[in-house]
View 1 (cartoon, rainbow, N blue to C red):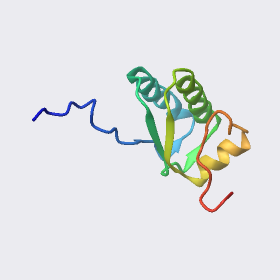
View 2: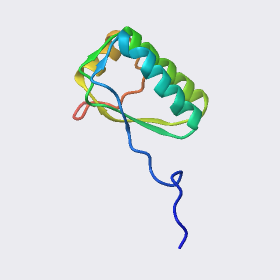
View 3: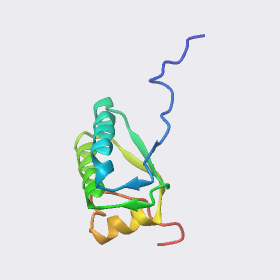
Amino acid sequence: MAKKSSKDAPRAPLALDADLRIGAAPALRDTLLGVLAAGEPVELDGAAVGHVDTAALQVLAAFSRDARAAGLPVAWTGVSDPLRRGVSVLGLHALIELPAEAGVN
C-alpha cells in the first residue's frame, strides 16, 4: 500500500491570531504570502479574532485578491464578530468574502 504524501493530506485551517492589529500585520502578511506560494486552496479560521484593525484587514484583503487572481479558493471555517464588523465597517465584503452569518438570509 502506497503511503500518502503530506501533499495528499488535507490542510488544517489557518487559525488567525486573537489580536490582528497593526503590530501583527507584518507576520500575518508573511504567513499569507507563504500560503500563496504553496499554491493550494486555503481555509482561514477567524473565530478567535478579538481585535482587528485596518492594517490587518488590508493584509487580508490583499491576500484574498491575490488568491483569487491565482485561482486559489479561500474558505472561512470561523469568523468572529469583531472580524465581521471590521470587514463591514470598511466595506471590504467584495474582497474579503466572509461566509454569511448563520440564520441570516
